[in-house]
Length: 303
Ligand SMILES: *[C@@H]1O[C@H](CO)[C@@H](O)[C@H](O)[C@H]1NC(C)=O
Ligand SMILES: *[C@@H]1O[C@H](CO)[C@@H](O)[C@H](O)[C@H]1NC(C)=O
Ligand SMILES: *[C@@H]1O[C@H](CO)[C@@H](O)[C@H](O)[C@H]1NC(C)=O
Ligand SMILES: *[C@@H]1O[C@H](CO)[C@@H](O)[C@H](O)[C@H]1NC(C)=O
Image (cartoon, rainbow, N blue to C red; front, side, top):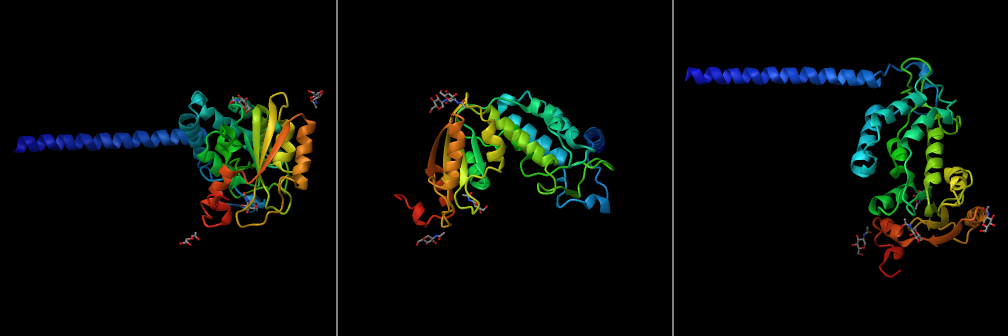
């Protein structure tokens, strides 16, 4: 049936043509977007670029930050659905692009901080120090609590690295300064500001998960928690801090709620009119530790 054949050929050709147009349009869009967002400018490494001891800027930074932002405002906290993620990325990028990664200032990030600010419900803030895994595991299973990394600013930057380069593409993909190399590096300044904002916006009863198995003491004044967060809690909004002092299951119990560094923390908070309670091995969090150590005596049902 020649007629049918020719009509199916036409359909096929139409399909191919449509396919080609779609691919072309798609490619053009990608290039336009990439151009707008200044990505993909990774250059071959040069000796000067490997000047720092830390990991370089995470590859696909723009896709990660943008994707996380959209994920956050769409599936994690839809009250923020009107936040402009493209602008979040732009302000994030502008903060460090082409800048010397040891001379970052809080002004660099101020526009981003202002854009990303929102209020956190009372009683939900969970601070942490040296308990990253357990604290985040806990907030993933219990949505009554939020860590900084469960807020927009913490979420978009969790686990990634970024820093500027005054020349080339403006981004250093080879290396970035470690916290110990210079204090005012892009990550340190960012995390201090985001932590400060998290503490300032906290209210009601707040909690902190500390590590009672570390050699350096569960509470350290030099940590972000000790140097940024507790000093930025507003005693007019925050009435109480609950300390959850966690020990590694089967590990050393170097400090308990009666320990020296906990007493120091208690004193600092009470002087600021914030009352304190402390609980060793807060059971709901300990049960998560127990999923990896089901046979340990601390994990048996009636311990
Ligand atoms: C926060 O906790 C306090 C004390 O337990 C309680 O009185 C208050 O209603 C709680 N606030 C919210 C918003 O849940
Ligand atoms: C306490 O700190 C040690 C060393 O950093 C770490 O290996 C351990 O997982 C931490 N424990 C908890 C409960 O977070
Ligand atoms: C703490 O509260 C008491 C009584 O409510 C008040 O007199 C004192 O000034 C407060 N201290 C601080 C540091 O706010
Ligand atoms: C826990 O104990 C049971 C029974 O004694 C044993 O079969 C199981 O392999 C143990 N699990 C772990 C993780 O050690």
